Length: 391
Image (tube, rainbow, N blue to C red; front, side, top):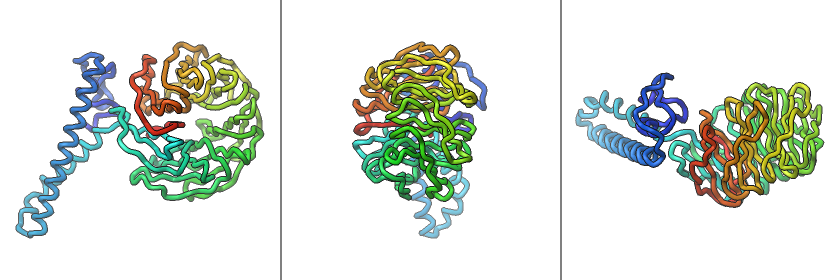
């Protein structure tokens, strides 16, 4: 039943051959299968094939109905109730066949690879400027904002059509992009001007830019409450803190050399910053603006992603070709997962079950089970994938 399915949750009998239960309106049903990836893949393929078949039959039926309407032979009026039922079933089948979509910015290809996270397959490619890097989803989930470095601009991509609907001039070399939780702001770190550009999402216009201390800012990430913006810079040893309401930097927190990825715990109490040249992750007390712990990761710690429950942080290690798994309760590395070459930025599915890692030098995305810390597969994408966002 499609109405009982949670976001990104596998459908039966696919779920019967994973370690995840099938849920009916939030209640787990008895599990009659076992964890068998090959059977899951088989039933997933069958499920998708049947969904496509049903969709094709519905389309054929609609075409035939339209012919009856044009011919005015009275058949169309008698078909009305059945047409409505078939159309509904077709929509259910199409929706059920796909999980949340992962969007991968391929810097060298100038494209976004679209991955169906249910089947872990690329289902589309979207042209997005000449060198897409940072990405953030608009609050409504319909628009993807993508930085295009050579164009010195932020592109707004309509995800329904795959078309670039607007181009916002930012200044030379824009990098990381993020969105505030209230949907008001889209921000982009702009390297050569040492600033963060604030774009008003409602109007799609550049509202103002906030200067930052660090040279060549790369990532700008909102705290969960939207009050603070943490900014990392390639040529720095600190994280800059911008007061969003005031639109200006108010502090710097000393960490390690070349800070990169930033992630907050869901409650906003701590921030984690990966520092590439020190291969170390720093845990920061947000209220007191001080370092709580330094955690040795793999060589060239880079991207970070927090599991939605806040219990686990994942860190990509660019030179090592691995992902470190950090228990946020103890701030210890509890596992290391091998991925592709030069892993960069990452994202986790909304249900928290899978991590998607962009491997820049392997032209692939590695998928990791966030519960078992096991790599599930590698998905070929475009050239030089820089990052991932999921909706």
